Image 1 (cartoon, rainbow, N blue to C red):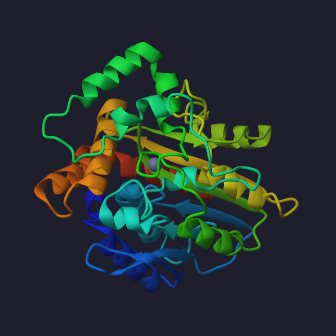
Image 2: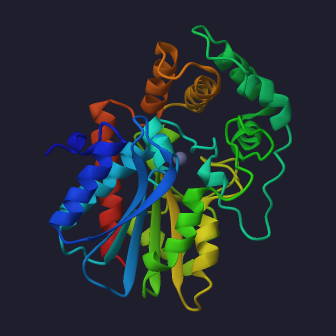
Length: 357
Ligand SMILES: [Zn+2]
């Protein structure tokens, strides 16, 4: 099967193909429903697939924290499952569609407009506040109307980049905000249902393993078709060495606004890490495996327009459908070259991680 065939057409197909493959290879399947519904009223679930045999080390691969990016992470999971069959080199846990609503409805955000990667707050953090300048940018980012066919937003965005510089602007917009519930990059006013499910299930994902590596698949940041492992937490010297040996010294980056990424509160990684550390002696390494697609203004424009369509447009209208199709394209390009290349790199990454644990 060519690599492009592993990309699902939609959420339901993605989930069914994973379930079928897991059943075929004797993996355990756990299904966790959320309250919100799919486009046709169907049930939405986080599905977790665990490889058949216990082992001292666990590799976790998660997808769809940002729903619309789900088809890529899902393709990686299905590909890996098919490669490994019933005997991966380590214990493997596949967490499919952390944000099933966003996956099914082609949104980055969840059923409450929450960016899940801003919602995993630590116990000492509160669901309030915004980066300086987000409020100034709010009218530009979140106009209260459906998207217009001719949208001067990209020009305004370029102007703001020139005025403030890209790192400052990235931080202001994408750092996460807790004050504008209909705005983009909203972190929520409390833990999302998906976050609660992750909290309950995380100990099962870790199992008895003393060593856990967790790769969370994302798209839309960085150069076309290439990837970076983004670390929210400074790796230990030993982890740094392991990352360098396995993937090369250029493959990873500790997040800061001057690099590919930016500082954000409420990320999945630090939250999992805090819980992993509750078990003394457990070695846990989390990285966002971030695959680049289009440039930052193109991506931001698509996020902004789909968000406008979601809140202010007519559901199912041509304009809304166009905005969603565009969002899907900027996060998981239809280009066969991008799809093949991204999946091959992702598999190389996953395979090397699994063999090196
Ligand atoms: Zn993402």
